Length: 420
Image 1 (tube, one colour):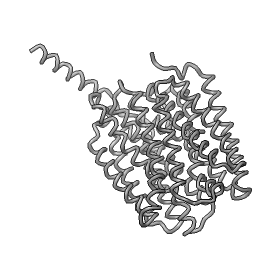
Image 2 (image 1 turned 45 degrees about the vertical axis):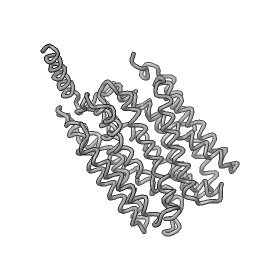
Image 3 (image 1 turned 180 degrees about the horizontal axis):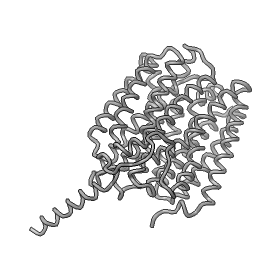
Image 4 (image 1 turned 135 degrees about the vertical axis):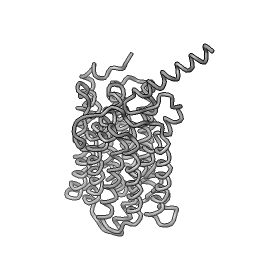
């Protein structure tokens, strides 16, 4: 009888702890549910870059410049940032599922538009919808992973959420490259496959063990996302490394196929997709490799990796060396991966659950603004002065930003310390 009574008390205490988690995570959820909660993040991020190897086909069929191509990419950033202004706050107030399910619906609509696109406007609309869906996923979806994991598994939640994002981002272009070369309807098949992946993600969200938040938050529903008072330095440190890293990978995604074409003389979509996949595979693998290191070390290593990526990029375009371009992409992926893991880990460890989605949104706003502006500028600059000079100027600017980010991390000790 005493064992039964003890079990009853433990169960009651578990329910009480569950009810106090703010955003509604179930502390008793098994580890496999934490992995499954990351699946919607992966599925949407597959879509985020699935079109990358296909732009050479749309450029041939529709006809548009490298500058226009980067504008198509930039509308993804516009949709994403617009979504981040809303989705984080809404998710923290009404729950994860009411944000994630409409986002998956928009992602399905983007698949349909991509599969039937015959104009630049259609590509822009598809990228805009994709950006909105991704904005919801990086705020509500990544917070949902933390909710399901519970407060005792914050580090593994940050790792899985971050790896789900970069793995999906790399898997998309690889699938598109292979399917467009080996299957019929090269600009259609990958989006049919992606629609199936999104449908399975919607099923996962419907069954996800998260509850609606019980506390009523205050303030505007649409606002620039932020963090609770006193946590601004942690956010700034994450952005200082994450922003240069994701800007580097955005450049490779938008202009990498053009660089490959210039260096290799090939428009192989499998090669372009494989390089993007390798870049994000590096971003995924490096996070598992460094997960046990101190956050300050992870952020510093991320800044160093992005710096080396830009040095290698400049060498690649001036020597027409494909190997150097691939190394640059791998280093860019590692830089984004470590910057992202370090930033998410800082937020997960210091921001309460009821503000976590908004904090994730703030980190991504800080990262994606330069990731939208700088590659677009490099694209139009390349149209005007040539790809070699345009890529060199881009590399020099981003190199400087990565160095500054690393110096800021090294100079700020107390805000990046790990808990005992």
